[in-house]
Image 1 (cartoon, one colour):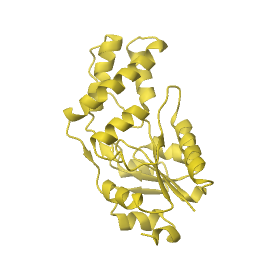
Image 2 (cartoon, rainbow, N blue to C red):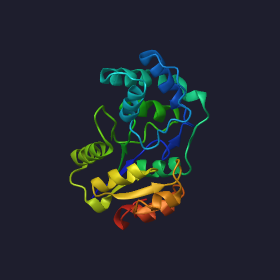
Image 3 (cartoon, one colour):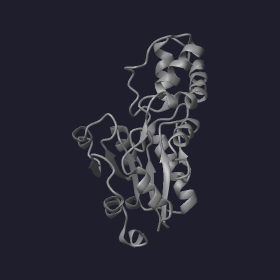
Length: 230
């Protein structure tokens, strides 16, 4: 029996304090010739491909500029992350440390970041060694497509996984929605821009202010047979 935990990144595992905005601003300046500020540009729940598409549209650029914007953002991101003081969110490292040594549990990324963007963030915040691969944003994907790809990845590596043993952990309504697409149990954490009350309106399986201490986390999401191995 395998338990699959699918993790969002921004607002769930870590906060960059919106340092990524600097990379987006640099990308549209260099690729699209726009000097617009993105301080108030909403990114929560959007995939990187969706952000690049929206920015290209708002700057009056053609569809052929979306991928170049995305690639330049990826190139600029590592040097932009130190420009803000971000942090790993509460109890994340404790939980991931336990999971890493727990047989029968797969931690897989399910994120709107591109693979390169995700790696930059995880490396910068010391989380890159905890995950068994992941599903990432590609041009043309929506969250549901990414979720299905994450589930396919988990099953290709661990065999058939029951719906009741799959969990999508995220901080936005879009994380809840994509979890429901693959019939996963959804864990909504109010560590991003959405409040707990706002997240509850989308009917997640479990809604919490932040990830709890490992004992509480495992008592909720792990079957007894797996949790007993801790």
